[in-house]
Length: 378
Image (cartoon, rainbow, N blue to C red; front, side, top):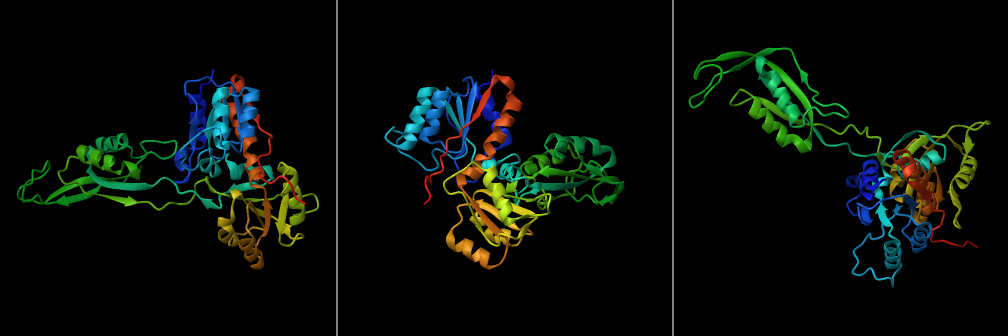
């Protein structure tokens, strides 16, 4: 049987907590890691109604998108909605796990799930996530000492690229020249005499976090007292598949490209219904070939989206003035949907990933309780 620790490890592997924004609060909120998990309820919000559903269904774990405690609290008494949620879950023996901004940017995360639910293809982030900081180390080594130096650097972490390790490049031999001065204790050559040694150039990529360890290992393995080497910081190529939002192509219908109106109708069909519905700004008859989306509140991306080759930007919580100014620039049309509905599209994706990873030992359920705060439109 799966334990809570097993499930948390899976979720954190898919949506690493280290990728969450610095202000966020993600991870395990409630529960004993050694406890058994047989039923997992998935929801957007840790609302009292969701906690009641977890109790009624006898869930062992509730995974939510929005944090229960995003800001500090001084009490979890059941006199507050957050306190009631926590007391209900604790009384039912249900754990609580949050994946928020770490799930927003990830492959298989919120924005990607939203894009796929709308039928978008060839997805790429609006703003690619920064890749891990990397360096390149270059060192010149006598030919017969190249192998141990390469091995020492690899052992310290150099040459790890994706699913590969011990990757390095050694160039053809050249000539290294040096004259040891008084006080030197050269392994090769004599003090005061010019020496010429056949050397090779070794280069390897390394995580910047391993820089000190790799340099120390190289110096320890190198036969020279004062080896020639340099470390160069690599630029981020911006090729990470993770990042903020998604841009994708919208396949045409049988009669050609969908219009903004037809795309908005597709959005209304694909997302769970809410009182707020789907709002559109821009020409409803405009053809749509490329679409940008951002799950959750996305008006912070308006300036970035204005410079993209897209016909529509879909997100939530757009404010009057930013939306009006955006449309006035005659850029992409805007489609504004309920925050809860957009992020709900991630839950079935997560449920399927859990089923595939945990098999029949664990049952998953996507909550259909609408926790969008707006309940009526006149």
